[in-house]
Image (cartoon, rainbow, N blue to C red; front, side, top):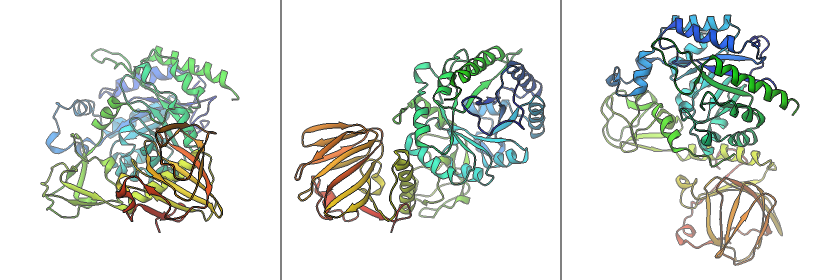
Length: 512
């Protein structure tokens, strides 16, 4: 039988994962049909001893959709959402029906008003969709309530996943991250299940789950995800009825039963017991289409500072438009040209800058980067960020460097983020030895290229031109003779003449 809410752990375990059954819009605007789906799910899981939750999706459509596009069914999501609209009272009826059938209840809100409804309606779990995982205005509202929170990471690279984890782990007591591929349905070759390994290694203090969008007949992927340590398994559910088809990534009762039985078998076998560079362009486009665009609430004059109250976050979103996911309270925004009421905001008509916010985010990412490599930074170490071509290009060119000891001998710990490069340079006084601790470090010594994996060692002799990069993010030790401040000479003279290419910080605090 389904584990009752009183017995259920917040986020399950390898032996008893929490099942999230996403009703989404499959109720088709009918309470009766919604109840029928819930009943069929209850019957399908009647012999499965796992905690399970029915998940709803809340959207305050009157404010979420831009007034000019309400009723505009050229946008498939607007059409779907408007055609399946039900009232708050009807949602509450479905929530109570779910509880009566022994389920926990979870909900995904897509705007701030819906977050408050999730709280008011007494849900057990709040779920943040992939499209909203970096929707900072929405996340700011979510953390106010400190509910058990699950966040899907579909379409997020490791940089943005770090940002989300850093923000939420400090504000949410019970947090989970879900590996998710936001392609509907997801081909087996694109499930990227190894990414669960990366999430578990990198984010040790949160539960990790798997949100499934594969073909409903696929009963293998769930067991593999469970074997990799997923504690939460999410699957869409539906029910065929007259005039109501089921989409090709939602499970009907017989498919749900088969899936859950395979999970149960896997959990019995597991009793007692990545890819950082993952990228899917189709998924990113799919996620972006569901994000909220930034629109002017009223007229904004050229060169006017733009406050949060001057904008609204609404769908649809267009190419080049700023989204709620890119709207940070830490950044300074100024209208580059006059913006009319209701007009979308973009990088063409808005200038955004805030170096302190950028440095702060880099620091939070750096902490996670070193922690994921198992590196402990000693107290009072000197930490500095190198940004050879400016802080705005840090993700392309730069490193995080921690000087642990600098006497006649020197030890540094250096972090390189995925895709980041430290440009070619020479040292005229010191010799260095690199010891790779985590990730892949690609070092060029003159014309020769060396690939270092954890445990590999490479020496850079005095006067040897060298540069390094990492495709997946690396941490390494640099052991050398004494470090001299003015002993790095870059091949690109513009770097040598840049007096602002380093930012020194106290250990994991704001820049000095």
